[in-house]
Length: 215
Image (cartoon, rainbow, N blue to C red):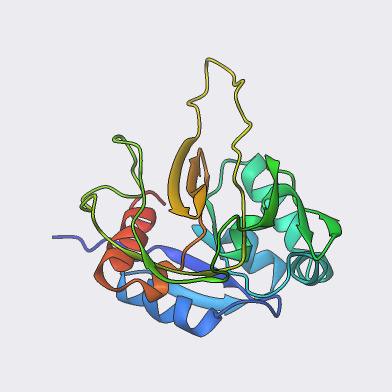
């Protein structure tokens, strides 16, 4: 029987993100993983994972300095898979507001990343999500599965109401901390999670496996 080659995944290294933990989790899920900020390697991989920790504006500055904004845009223009994690998800939206300072995001999705509307901030620890029944990202996962979150900002309003009837509408997953917020999005070649799948135990491992199987 012919063995299938492992999917090649680049964890994009632009100075913001837990790249080593992401690398280990993807490797456990069966991917051939490389951590690099190299433009050509990021463009040519089967999948690109964009991590992110810290402030929205700083992550955007770091991504642009590494030409990551071009990489994401070019890959998505060609229908090539990209996955964002934590702030790596947040910067996919149009803008972020932190401490009253507004910064432009990649604008792949409309919406504003703002402070969590909760009594206790940051949202740190395990929480459940409400995923669409036909989600591929959460396929095989129980509704009461828990995922690990660490964040003080989120998107509370999904405003992408109109879509091309020839293109599948984005699948949006929600979680609640104080008020509901966007926990994950599946939109063609672009998937993202607000939580950290690489820190979410067996559930996170299954989720990463689900992504790799689509590459």
